[in-house]
Length: 524
Image (tube, rainbow, N blue to C red; front, side):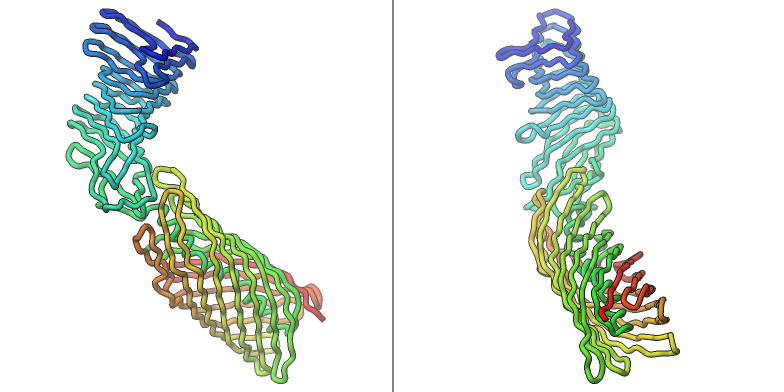
């Protein structure tokens, strides 16, 4: 019997009946659909002593296959066929590549062969078991999980199991309330079958767990748990604000240096980019790619013993955060500030900066099973910097400038959740950075290059982050070395172009490159 590009359905009773003692082959193909009882009834009535070979090719089955005692049914699903329902007492079942079975309740087959096919429990309410006499081939199983109640969709192979099979176990950001006890997901009666989980891990709250073989059975265990991708992502967001703030400050320090060299106020604009590689105290690293612009205006005030210059600035930067396994984040930073520099006639100077930021943070997490989780929050940061040094003239055009600087940043703490139910809390993020260094500059009328070296120390500790109640250390305490170079090109007495390049490396953080270019117009 052949069913080709047809629809066969029943409201009550089976869609197809096979009389007692019959031997039949039924082929369902070319987009056909068999449906019984609105997808909940019996597709077949195979009476006692009947033998049926059912081949379904590129078609759809909605209903159950329950074979009564004395009947024998072999089923082969191929070429993208979809089956939604239960199976009971099927003799042989084969699922070829591209075939999917959405299992809707407890089912059993005597022999299951997977040639690339998949079986998924996700659409079924509650938790169910698939029992098999034997399993072979290569395929995948999608299982639901409830750690709080120690429930999972279960695979029970009473005989031999062979082949390689992937378990796609539902990931979640919710933390198991009762902790984590080993949970059996597969039983076999023997054989050399290998089971693995999709993405190698199962994310359950703040941690990811692995699959372990114990005898002939397979368990989810916490023996080698790892920090989950979602935890890494929220850590990166909370930890990125200080590097965002300092990256934006690089343009302002260059501007203040220009002012000290010329003594003129004016209007200016700079665009910049920075890359950071951050490891952090707990080793939860990320890469940060920052780009943005700053603009401002300033004016000098003449004093009896020197010059005082004050200015206003504003700007915007965007930082893209990337991590292993494909998770990412974005920080949009909007800022305003004020700055000033005082320089006396002997070359001594003091610089001060005060800057207020609004951070708009977004996390885009790729969980271990390749499902997505998202979350966002907004917070504010306030930072200040104070630098003192002296310009020393070595020759007519050569100047050296030793300096010491201290910067402090406080970023508002925040609590937020991902849509995977993972919850993160950060009381506040702090940075206290001390720095000593020296700048060597050659000044002439048209072109003024410089080089800079500095040693910095981050003093802030214990920027803790809580993820589902688990505490992680998020600070960047440690020493860093910095190297910079740049030049100023005068196009006229009022118009000047600038370019600066930076490198930094230290404990838990590296800046492979930083660059900014800009223009300033000096007021007469």
